[in-house]
Structures are given as structure tokens and as C-alpha cells.
Image (cartoon, protein in one colour):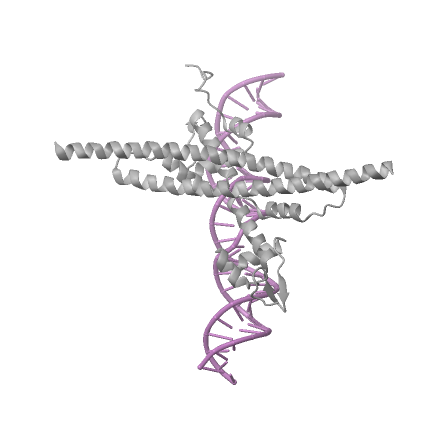
Length: 140
Length: 140
DNA sequence: CGAGTAGTTGACGTTAACGTAAACGTAAGG
DNA sequence: CCTTACGTTTACGTTAACGTCAACTACTCG
């Protein structure tokens, strides 16, 4: 299999960092925190598609204001084994809480959007009135 | 006018802090950072309804993962005077960027919600299958 | 008047999420 | 072989957003 086959590509730390607009330092930190686990070729880190997807999820979590520890917890939900009943129930409980959190956050966003749109309307109206006043002056 | 009239109530720092589940220290910090400006009665801070609304907005911003500096910038949008044309255009530009930010964040939330819901379905199905297996065993 | 409660400023401590620099290894190219 | 580019670990520095503590003031209650 060639390295260039789609879906099997690998990435150096620098490549991945540049692609996502973060620094190598950040990627190493995420690894230390248990959010990434690239393979090694000797001492160098080799990232695959799976790691790439994880990084995408990390950055999504960051945009939503989550701490790295919270992001890791959400990964634990992805990874946890579906072995025992108690385990599954615990997982469902955690998922439910995440869901609530997200719904609340979405409400906040909708409210903020409404505020921004209201301010935008006010401002464009004020601008329009200002300009209409200037037109009158020019034609006066 | 009485202090107890609706809409004119005032609050001590402790009252406001408890109501919103934050500490007095946080309120003082928000003030230092220019996010709040309560009146004073001698040396003590007196918060009114307007301050209370602001605090609500501050906490909404925090839930969305914004820095205090970003929250303050959004307040500047509320407060900026509609005097000059250039001012209004600048404001409309900033509002537009906020709007984009919020829309992006909303997409992130919708994606995260979809993930959580998929995981929830998987887990509840696994749980159901596990329990159906247990029922068979009991009746075997 | 003394104790308790709630507020004040000032200063130092803490945690997360990196930035930055030092000192070193390694593979490619001229 | 020497330089350049890219990687490694280790460790200390930095910023934001508070927590915590000390020392002081002011009001109220018994």
C-alpha cells in the first residue's frame, strides 16, 4: 500500500499543525492531555486520518469554549466499550447531560443572534436616516 | 420613589452574586475590566436593574466561551453612539463579524448535537440488545 | 460597648493552555 | 562534510480569570 492512497495518508506534526492553523506545541499538549495518540516512526510523530478527525473535534470543542478535560471526556464517550449494562447506563447519563448542555448553549446563541440582528437593524436604520438627511441638505 | 418599586430595585454585591451563582470577587473583576459600573453609596457598590441585565449578558457570553475582552467589545456595540456615519459603518462591520461568528458556532453545536444523538441511539440499542439477551437466558 | 455580619482595597496564589527557548538528533542537499 | 530544515524533550515564562487572605471600615443587634 502506498502512503498516498486516499484514507491512508499520514502527516507530520508540522503538516497537521499548518493545515489546522495551530502550533506543534499545541498538538504535543493535546497528546500529553490524552486527546491524541499518534504513532511513532522512531521518535517522530506520525498522524493518520483518525488522528486528523480527532483534531478536528478538538478544535470544534475549543470553539464551543470547552476545556481540554471536557473534550477528553467526550472522547471517552466515543471510545468506551459497550460491554456491561452499568457502563452503558452511565454513558447514556453522560450523553444526556451533554445534550442538555448543548441545547442550553444553542439557546444562548439564538438569543445573542437576536440581539445582534436587532442592533444591526437599528444601526442601518440610523445610517439610512443620516444619509437621507444629507441628501436633503445637498438639494436644499 | 421607594427602593422596592419594581424595576427600581437595587442590590448589594452579595445579593447579586448569590442570585447568579458567582462570587463577589468575580463581580469586582468584571468591574475592573469595564464590564460593570455600579453606583456607589459611600464606598459600597449598589447594583441596579441595568447592571443586573449586564451581568446576565456577561454570563451568557461566558457560557459561549467568550473572553471578558470579547464580551466588553460586544457591550461597546450596545453603547456606541449613533452620531457619525463612519462610526455607524464601523459598527455594522463589527456586528456582521459577530453574526458570522455566532452562525459558525451554531453549526458547531448542531454537529455536536448530531454526534451526541447518534451515540445515544447506538448506546440505547446496545443496552436493549443486552437486556433482551438476559431475558432469553432467564426463560431458557 | 462588644460581637457579628457584610462590605472595601491590595496583594499574592493558582490553574489552564499554551508560547518560547535551549540543547540535541536526523535526514536531505549542495 | 557542512548547512538547513524539521523533529525531539525539558523547562521555564505568560496570560486570563478568578481564589484566597489580610487588614480595615461600617452597621446592627443584644
